[in-house]
Image (cartoon, protein in one colour):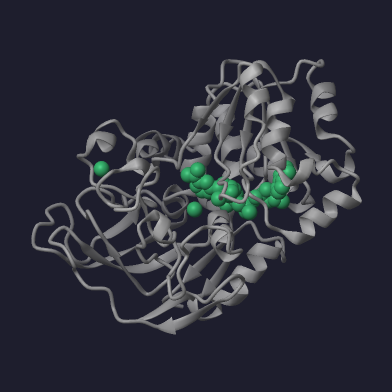
Length: 381
Ligand code: NAD
Ligand code: ZN
Ligand code: ZN
């Protein structure tokens, strides 16, 4: 089969690989119909996630058709169309029993924190991902769900990670009625977090980014008030000014480790404080929320970025909650919101790319070219 393959930082291409096989009785093989590229894939692409091996296939956001099932699989049969959560989890261990699917103890022998994630390096179990014609899906009775006939493919795809993660980010923010929520990052996760904040009772939603085309999307898709940080010397001062000097009630970090050289230049040219290379959005969040405020971190941080102001956060009595989102937990409620016409996650998709053009897709998404919000690979195209 054809699959996206990692060849080193900033180098991905399409290669022939052996078709995936059933390796365990509860495996399924899924023929991929749509696979998105995620901001998280950019951390791999930028070489920032440890133990990302040459030859690995990325892709943790995908939907497709079941091609084959192992002998113990009961809930799926060949021909079923499934949405697959980005986490690989057993469903029965200590952590899964508590809903902590992203911390499953049974899928990743190396795990000290993370369970399994498709296509997310050997740190997350070494499972090949879905940016390919086919993918092996372990614990097939546990993760995948048959796509309901009323759900569009694009919406289903966005629930395998990006939208469900944004929603989870808003949940972890523990938003109270009328709260002012500031969301850092207007990528798919930030847009979804902003949109979801309203569903949880926010009274005001502010989105910060430096890309005007994404801020426009935040106004259109998430009805947010937006600010371009490149136009402000000090984002924290701006936030204080916007919130009667108290700070926001809730901040959601939908940025994470930022390895974009252009952005660093951009920040320097705007005379923004770089804070010694520490995570910028997270520190803006810590400084920009009020005392006793909540911070929800969805942005992913590799080991290069560990100089976080946790001391300040502690002294301010902040609540920091974080996790890789156990997205399947969000689905029943998200299904209801979609059916009620309150959300339309698939609207975030801006590009559809054949698998053969994966290198161009990564370059475009990483460099934020062509007003790209969410690119999707179509292996069958
Ligand atoms: P993305 O790259 O499309 O979006 C990130 C956005 O942040 C960009 O628009 C960028 O311009 C903006 N940005 C950069 N620095 C900023 C700053 N200092 N302040 C405000 N905005 C800034 O990525 P995405 O797909 O939306 O994902 C966002 C983050 O969430 C990534 O770090 C990704 O790894 C992480 N993620 C985590 C989970 C999880 O389960 N926790 C799941 C999916 C994605
Ligand atoms: Zn993702
Ligand atoms: Zn488990």
